[in-house]
Image (cartoon, rainbow, N blue to C red; front, side, top):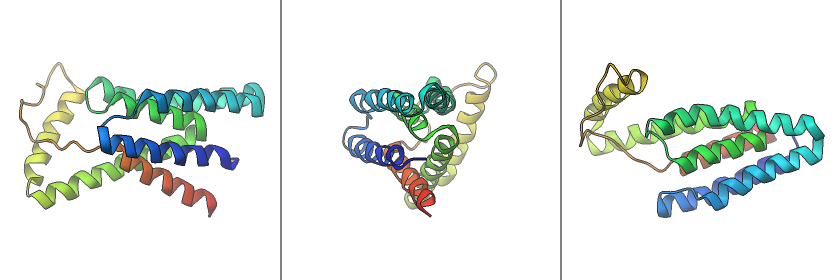
Length: 170
């Protein structure tokens, strides 16, 4: 992989983290131009093959997080950011980035829950919410006021991009 996609992914992750921490959103003015730039640049650089690979990366990274978005478990800015990153770095590295970000945000949630003494309540609420995500017709949605932790994904995404960059340069 040429270095520009990873550098642009890192820059995008930094901006996304700042806006996510400040406003709890990742704005369209960041995600949509990143996606368009990735598609156009890969098409210019490698022709139809580059465009196809960028589209595949975008789609492969979009679908899993879109499922979470439709279940109100993830914000739309996160979905578009992952799609843009998939277009930039390709399907394999994009999925690795997604998986790493989700593992990290899970660890962040567990640490903050242990710190605040709410781990058991969170685990029970998460179990019930997971059952509802998998089979909404059979399991009721989580109760209003159920234990939950909302953390901005931006920081976990930035850490995942840094891990991908560290792996790429070694």
